Amino acid sequence: MKKIIGIGVISILVILSFAIISALIGFYNSEVDLGNRFTQKMNERTAFYDGMYRTIAGKGQIALKNDSSFSKNVNAIMAGRKDAPNLFMKWVQESNPNANYSEVSKLYEDLSRTVESKRDGFFMEEKSIQGIVLEHSNLIDKFPGSFFNSLFFHRLHLVYKPITSDRTDDVMKTGKDNNVSVF
Image (tube, rainbow, N blue to C red; front, side, top):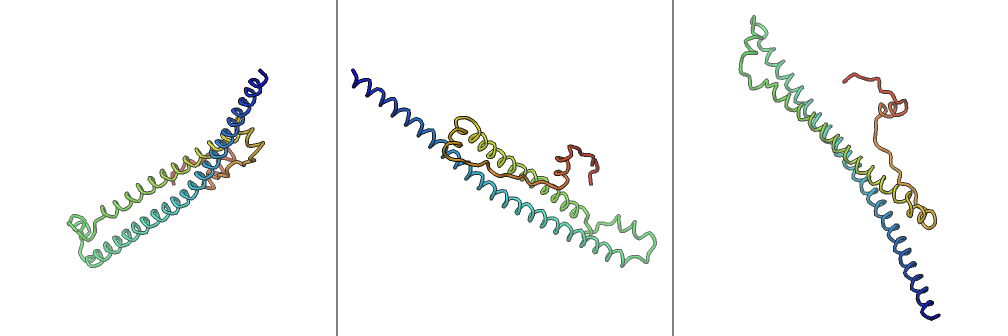
């Protein structure tokens, strides 16, 4: 009878030890996974931001170059005709393939759409990183993870700082946004 009780106690201790070790390994692996995903997403955010900046800057330069070319073209056409009275109205009514404002306008529309889509994409990157930080914080702050972390691993919270503007930082500090102008 003592052997059966001894074997039962040893079996329970082995099962408990196995369960605790499995939980510790699960905690450790989850924490490492979240840390690695965070690092990957931070690198992805950097690459996305760089691509966003370069795309918007490039499209802006193209639009400005086209705009200035359009302006020079119009001035050159008008300079050759400035002698005749009411010539401007006649020129406006002409079909002039060299002075097509709709093409310039399309470039600015494209630039506007690009800015909006890239900023939306960047916001989605930020939300993804915030989700990883939340998961990590929950893992190391909630029980039993907090117990495992304080006893065995001593993992720190992920350091995340969202990219913002000075204006946004001021609004967050003061809690007030009195700027209602569009531009």
